[in-house]
Image (cartoon, rainbow, N blue to C red; front, side):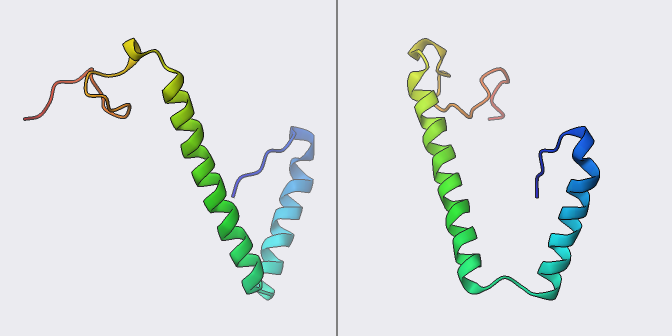
Amino acid sequence: MQLEVEPDGLDRAEIALVTELELLRSEPPADEEIERAISQLEREFWSSLQTTQAARASWPVSNWPATGNALSNTSQPSER
């Protein structure tokens, strides 16, 4: 769970968070709410991949690692 809170609203945010957690403990979410949450997480995941791919596509070819893999670390020698 992640909260973005202004410093002067920290106490209110903590109370709201604890209240929400207590509600979840006393009454679990309905199946529809769980499905909605799963769908939202999946959308966010795929959106982040598309954003990463779009950013990669906009990089000049000269910035690409020699292997063509953006996740590889070309600054360290291979362990072969």
